[in-house]
Image 1 (cartoon, rainbow, N blue to C red):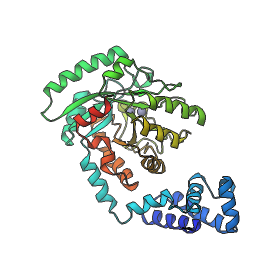
Image 2 (cartoon, rainbow, N blue to C red):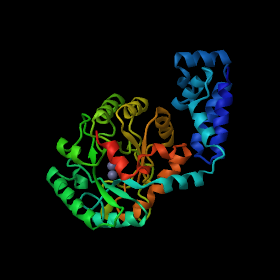
Image 3 (cartoon, helix red, strand yellow):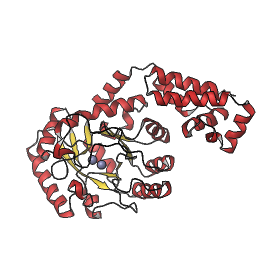
Image 4 (cartoon, rainbow, N blue to C red):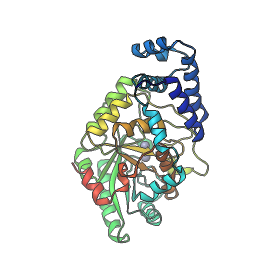
Length: 353
Ligand SMILES: [Zn+2]
Ligand SMILES: [Zn+2]
């Protein structure tokens, strides 16, 4: 079947507009459509074959990919995703997703850079109706965030075991860490401890400007590590300054500034996540919104699992899952692909190699 790539681009723009997506995103598809409409169809096809579409002003990686798929007679993945969510009430879909979540896999306490004791975080999670809260304080190298040494983490594990005795039936704190992915892709904590923890979130917090090849290698190494369960805020971007009302010691390390996405081969990293059973985090923090929706769609298409987490540094922030659910719903992420819709038992069975 032959398809008209320009019509596909315009259709995508229309659906994005109707879904009230950001103007710049719509414009990317409209300008690409105009740029291609100005050329003979044969030239468009020839440029697509040679991988030279992006040399045209107004055509970027995402739009060029759509054109290539379209010319190959396939419905562009981007369009397919938009059509899959079309006509669904996104608010209702986001609410359903939120209601399906049983816990949160990325949270901090005052043991690292959070603002509240573990117990207060846990009680807030109980209030929200969660069945579990994974405590993921930072690892040693993140000194600005008072990352836990191996000894402090061991003490925290004992403390959590005690707290769990006293918490309400049907709720538990699961042990975990947000471990730094170091420059060589290794994880910043003793192997024996990583093996002992229920859930390991791994994030890049340093060298975010590494070049594409280095960052890709770094992430691939981390994802292949059998202890890594969730790849945290994978692009490291900051889209806005700290939201209003979020101040104080609870947010050291989340300073007010914007930061571009790290550059890495997302398709390679997501394929590795599928192969090594590592979930991709959808970070709900308003200033992060990481990964961006285009990458959530790519990860979904690749077959990845997700974790919709708050990265809460204070009890009230545990309610931010709603933001992640909205973004996931817009990308058509189904509940059964989200690991924190699972019970604690299923989650632990999955994280245990
Ligand atoms: Zn982090
Ligand atoms: Zn965090």
